[in-house]
Image (cartoon, rainbow over all chains, first blue to last red):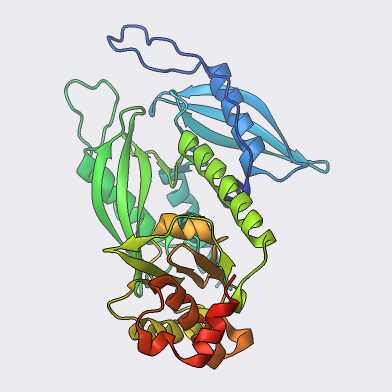
Length: 128
Length: 272
């Protein structure tokens, strides 16, 4: 279950011990009157992969970028990564603010989750 | 020894929330009515109050075990993302912790935690520096009672050396050590300032991070001597004498009635 895998990211981050070297530039938002630091999708993807590689996974685990998309309802980048080790791999989605300040290790779709929980409950009642 | 680092505690809560969600099975109460501010063209936008209620309901239902109480502290808008920051208080038994979670303004996605990348990097840097410092101090060897001498400036409060104790009642070594600390510090009333951080991870966090690897109990005496772990191996009686001697060395051998005891004086002479 993808949610559970967030633990490994958080735990990995807690034991990470090196410094990130972010590739970051500044640009101005079109139509904005104030200059804000906004990463391009490529920069956001690189920063995310760098951070996860440095802090969130043990040595030997490879992290690669799949793609970066803009989230319409949150003004965030959705960064899809592939985390692989010893022939197994998993696609993980993390989220980063466009200024590259905050990283969200995982998201829960509330309605989907509720539906899944309801289904599980129904199945449990049927089996019981 | 039990892990006690505030950072780990914070992560523990997030992990707990995630685990709780994975095993949660109840049904969320009906969703809140939606409102659409006239200036916003998106289909549905929750008010901060609705977002807070939805978040709290979800966490209560799915993310925490029974017995854990979750209450709303406040809801604010994030400047750099189209999200609400929902501050919650998670409490169980005697412990409580304030956490921030995030929800999209349409109430669709919930983020149980965020990492401030720059803050995290500087924290890691600081931890590395402190680890190196501890390693250097440990290379010089311990003094009495396995305490490590520190090269830091003495820490005082109103001119009195500060005695820090970090632990919690869920840790048997802490429970062993704590009454000894209380007995010894009571002999130095008026001569030392006691910061008893039993069951209180938030206080004196910087001091804890400086001297501890994240384990408890951790004892810091005037920022001149510290030890991670209890003195169980030398026994209660000797531990009391060691702590007394170390505190005497911090107070300039005051009070005299305590520090002129021959056994204590002998120990004071052993301090490097």
